[in-house]
Image (tube, rainbow, N blue to C red; front, side):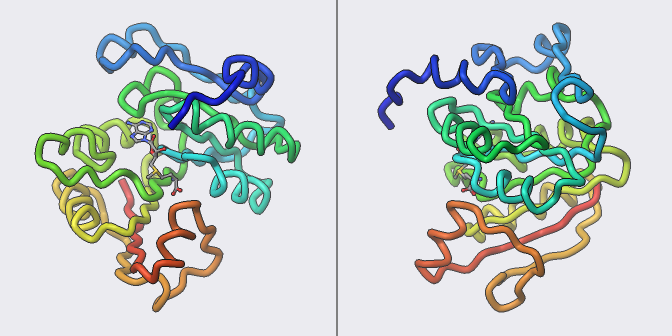
Length: 220
Ligand SMILES: C[S@@+](CC[C@H](N)C(=O)[O-])C[C@H]1O[C@@H](n2cnc3c(N)ncnc32)[C@H](O)[C@@H]1O
């Protein structure tokens, strides 16, 4: 993807709803020593439960959710600023007050997100990374599940959707290996629709191609 024109100026213009992490920082152990926790009282207009989306892409899902659920504060995380700018500008145009964007790698989330402050975490169409050499980068690798457990309140949930069956099965194994409770599993969302499902960019594309969508809900 080409770097978008005037990217830095455009990110700066969204400054009130955007936090940009130090993207060179990849080592979680070092990152947490230099915590820069988001202050929810400053970034959100009112105190409400927090939902976090990891890998939000262009933000269609989180912005729609923020409109539908004014009673929830949303944080959307994405590591590629060139992609995230579209999510931020769209929220800015719509005047959404209950969504904040964080350009950050999921690896260093504990630096920015206070411990046990998130009620629900969304993983929508995370990259399946099928090659064995990339297993540790899958967003449902136990390494990431341990991070999510730190961020989620006790009894908090992970809601996952994907079009990739092998990745879905891998994710279910990871949840079980981490001792998480698998609350629900759906192997064809079109056949068993989920009431209130908000469709993401990737989901819309996969549905148009007639692909099956897999969904799980897990309690940490
Ligand atoms: C396939 S896209 C899905 C985008 C969107 N959730 C959707 O459903 O349309 C996955 C996104 O996750 C982001 N991502 C992958 N690994 C990440 C990580 N470690 N930290 C933050 N974002 C990540 C990618 O940059 C990409 O934008």
